[in-house]
Amino acid sequence: MSDPKDLIVIGSGPGGYVAAIRAAQLGQKVAVVERDPLFGGTCLHRGCIPTKALLHTASLLDSTRTSASFGVKVAGAELDLGKTHAYKNKVVKKSAKGIEFLFKKNGVEGIHGTGRMVEPHVVEVERDGETTRHEARHVLVATGSVPRDLPFARADGERILNSDHILQVDRVPGSLVVLGAGAVGTEFASVFSSFGSAVTLVEMLPRMLPAEDEEISAELERVFKKRGIQVRTATKLASVETKGEGLALALESDGETSSLEAEMLLVAVGRLPVTEGLGLEELGVEIDRGYVQVDPETMQTAVPHIYAIGDVNQTTPWLAHVASAEGILAAEHMAGHETRPLNYDNVPSVTFCDPEVGSVGLTEAEARERGYDVAVGKFPFTALGKAAIEGKTEGFVKVVRETRYDELLGVHIIGAHATDLIAEAGVARTLESTTEEIFRTVHAHPTLSESIAEAAHAALGHAIHI
View 1 (cartoon, one colour):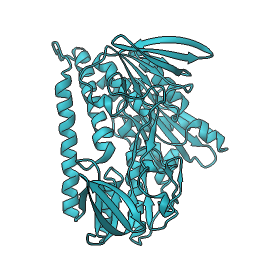
View 2 (view 1 turned 120 degrees about the vertical axis):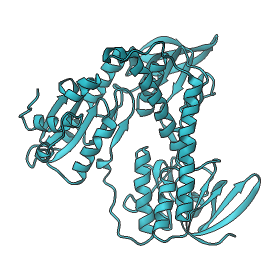
View 3 (view 1 turned 180 degrees about the horizontal axis):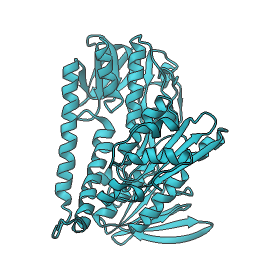
């Protein structure tokens, strides 16, 4: 048995490593168990970071195609997929080294191997056939999630891919069907359309990005179709068969069946929590369909000294920044600090497709369902000077307000840099700002951030620039 710890964290993703560092800052003796060779978890190695690296390459490629209109001639720009992967891997490796450095700086012990709980305060770690035991006062489960398979379309890494596989493809398919129009599906559809694939996006629900405001979804579908991406909503995948070097897909929509052929299929229909084999249920932790049940105010499970954060929790959105925030909350609670529960209504949602989407707070429909008297204001990027300068005029900002007290209920953005712009709205929501306070905050000109102030003006009925 190793030296006892105050906290052992199982998993080193954006929830686990952040929690570990915060606990160490609070004077706790901490160790992190990670089964992968490098720290960082899914987000760093198979999710957020490599995906956004590919999106950046796609953006640069698109920029070269339109640069002549800005007076910059680029002759024969083309994609080098091998160098794209090398650049992506370099970014990932550097970030992993950064986490390693932060562990050393804060005195966090890193333990490589597969961890499981074998006693209430004991984590067993298996590596290369050998096991070690580690005792801790608290244990934090931060094991994340993995891509969900379909029973009739199991990912094989060659023709049927999941989000892990597609990050490693060695060629750009001539045709790609993306199943699922959530954040993962729309981002990869955007990437491979820019890379040169003929992309078809298939979504079972009536619209793309179903969790976003309906007007945002409609605008994204319009722009995707303008880019040449085929979008088929309210459509189910019925079957998949191998055909020659590709696949034959049967689709169902409105009771009718149609066929579609493609070289590759990306299945992006959600994720599953990684809780099997952790030994949690045997210790009394409540599990529902693989998800850990926690008290959202503390992140404690039914066993008070065992906490869980991130994708393994049933009610937690699959977002890296949520896992990080929950990790800080859990670390501070177990260290005896006064804590403040997360307000999940104020968690920003960001999708890095082209155009980007960012939102925080309630959609218009959600606000009306909760009984608010709602007023809405919109401002299009076409009326924005900075957007015209950059040649990125697709999209708009939508502000949802409550009329009695002028409460800012939600902000929804589709357009250039939406994922950065949404931060202002997040701060405003946290500070319980009114819509008037937004537009009376002077926004610099010419910037894209002016669109938020203009939309706030519009929500109060006196838009200036449109």
